[in-house]
Image 1: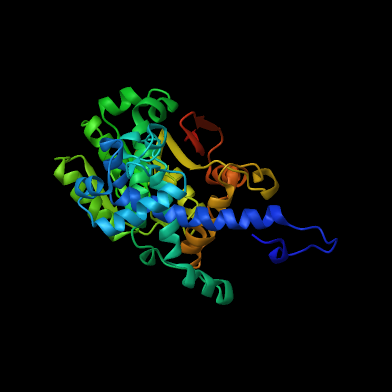
Image 2 (image 1 turned 60 degrees about the vertical axis):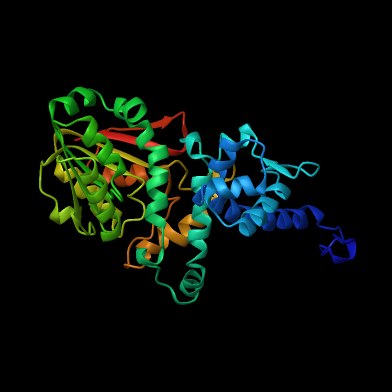
Length: 363
């Protein structure tokens, strides 16, 4: 980049570091799309199996079009993700990269999360319009979002349920084995509930979600596995505080679902109401502060504030909701849980999951 092209500050000092940051942002933003494509098409999985190989062999293994694979590989090479040997015209996905980019690497497959970038890009025009006119963007416009959320949940929640999450609640394991009633609020495609239903056949599981599309997938997934102890119900939880049946469930969960509700306080109030005396509520939500200054060193703060602006906040505002956003933070979460009636709240963090807090509280 020529010095003459670099803008100057008032004190005439060149701003090369910021210019470099912007150029790096441009490159990394482009690569995020290509990594998403590599995940969705199975290219990373194919390359991990083939080791050092040619374009043609990669194409054949993945069942894709050679011209597109060749161009994708070029982006991966110049981006430092794939190694290239020009003397042999061969490509290799290093094992250290495969450990973070393939399906066999789950729950450490970061390529899953790169898919959010392209999904958010689909609604950019609508978000710009919201900046100008207010309002929000409805769930229906986020094509593919629930599919990615299901993958995300499989890595952060489902894979950790038995070993890490269930032990957070005292005596929950024997209770589930004996048989209790469980509710998952904002269940999405229901992967967590289906896992629990299979693992604990004596317990009854119910999932609430607003998305008919996600619930249709949840029904099909459960039916294919012969699960008769799990039910998925399409339900708007905006007035859950009034609609919830009292003392119905022994365990209620909400995995990354409260902050984008239309009326999150009403949902929390309803959860408290529907819990049986002695029942437990477990809430997974973003590990962050409600105060911006405390999030300056958060490792993925830019991503979280972006997904807040372009998804979690806007889907709530689309229904004239509270619009808390992804980064509502631990302080506000504790305050709202207290208002719902929970007196003693434990905040847990799991070693495998730097992004979330796990709140545990009893009625």
